[in-house]
Length: 112
Image 1 (cartoon, rainbow, N blue to C red):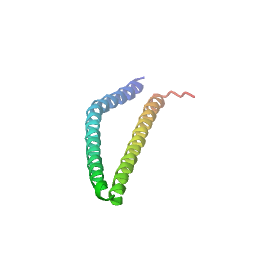
Image 2: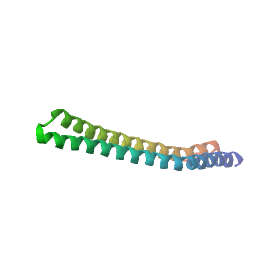
Image 3: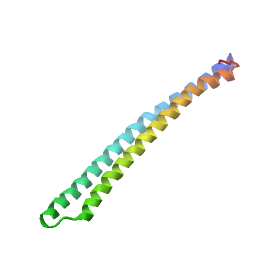
Image 4: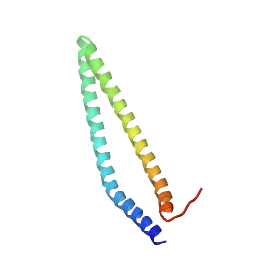
């Protein structure tokens, strides 16, 4: 019983320490993502403005390609971020599921 309580207390301590550090990091990450999105929109707006000015004279295929590349790379980055978020959630859920199971094994419990 003592080993079971020690394992549980150790797991709880690690969980709450990680939880304390996670909130500020998530807030910082959210702020950085907002900055990145603002920067992306600013660059895209500048390129589109430049393209509109050139259309009055002659169309710039190069500028259109740059705009398209920026849009696509931004979408790729968003998809990568979503995959990373999903992966982290899966890892967290797995650890939360495995930890109680391993605590039971440490305590000598076996459930099937």
